[in-house]
Image 1 (spheres, rainbow, N blue to C red):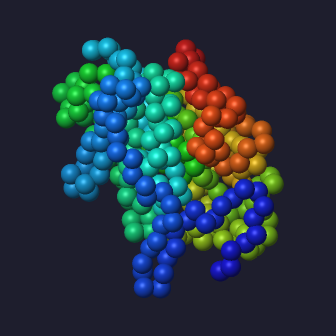
Image 2: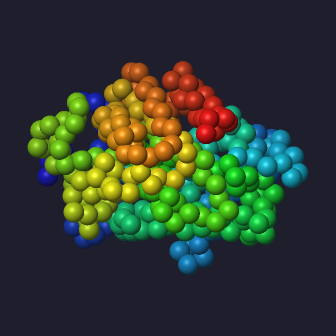
Length: 319
């Protein structure tokens, strides 16, 4: 299928190339930043820790440098984006962003790395994410395998955060948490930044031509070949009968005016608000910005405003 002409800031070259012999080439998102760990000059300390020996999967932990012994901090569990196909928890993009988030919000963070499609199609990324959450929960009584979480993670103030495909994963983890719980882990809030949701029928100002929609549909089937289509609850939460059971008491959704996924974020907000879910959902739109602009322009005014909103959300006293 030919690549459609897109004029709203969507960059389909971000997705990997699949050759006839089965070889997959990722053009970006594979760079690896070695964490500074306990470098005394780093404002935020970080290190990698394996959460699944079976899959040899790791998280990157972040802790503010000025954290005192025994000091408990809100715990942010972050799921990176990249269309389920690109980026890692260790790439410069996410390492830099998590450093900013952890410093600004004064939180301890777990940035989850997971196996990527198409080599590991959905639901593998979701299953890896849940395994990471179970690993985090093993620290509830202060006797887990990682000392930073034992000493500093406040399991009564936990937040799931993600962008793009990571926001999709964040939503799915909150749904699963609402169904299964994690003993001792109190999920307070969920932050979805430019969530990767879609649907069979166009809404709002989404492209309506068959070529563009067909291409976007193909991207979903590329990462989830077993899906029955773009009204699958995994990509279209409005079709999910479990929507009202979402875990947590607060949800914050970010959308960007020039993002091709903007209307889906608004649609999610409206559907969750009207689903019977008993929590509080808010939405913030960034004007004149495109998809995940805050990652490429972390110092711009709109990115700073987004960060301020996230910090306020974490420390809000709203129920």
